[in-house]
Image (cartoon, rainbow, N blue to C red; front, top):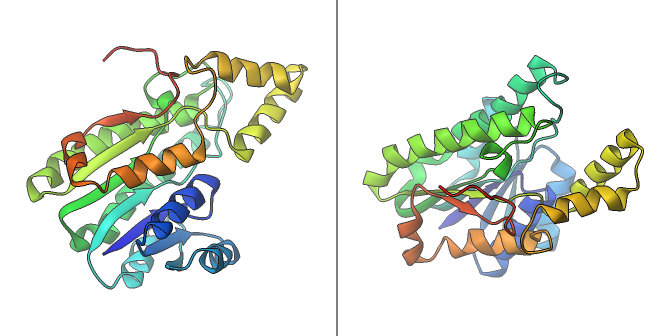
Length: 246
């Protein structure tokens, strides 16, 4: 049975794809950058590249055409480039963030739904800002909140069919992308990047940020039959960044 990873050429998607293929699971790797997907396929036997932009509806047919059997696991791991407060963000950019995050998940669902069987997993990587946003998090906060709501709806639709849904909510993850964000924030604030990084670390109770390998491990773990009990829930993999009790 096939796994599908959207955003496969990004740092998180690559880590997830690598872990799945190393465990023997074939992966349809979806992304916009054909060259990056070709490199991913060369590095990880078992990867089938699928060049598609999950932000547009044509991606539904592109993913469908790449599938030739049941889908064991479908993962949405595309990231958001949008940032800024409600005062500064372009309303069109806010709409684009929701289109990518919630709309993208919906496109993935439409692409794989006829291939899902009892025991299949439908997984979205969200973000803790959708639950506990800060004052500068209009884009990721709003888009991830919409994603959490949508995934709860999908759980109610597909749970009776034996298809379980799971939303993984990491906080900031130790990646090159975060390094770039920290550098930008430090330049904007006129402070040392290490001061900004310390702020991220200080919001965890673990004292460090989660790693890509830990996120990928969480995704692979959902393939276990026992993971069905996690259906419909939000799994926090954030090193203690989320502080609310719900």
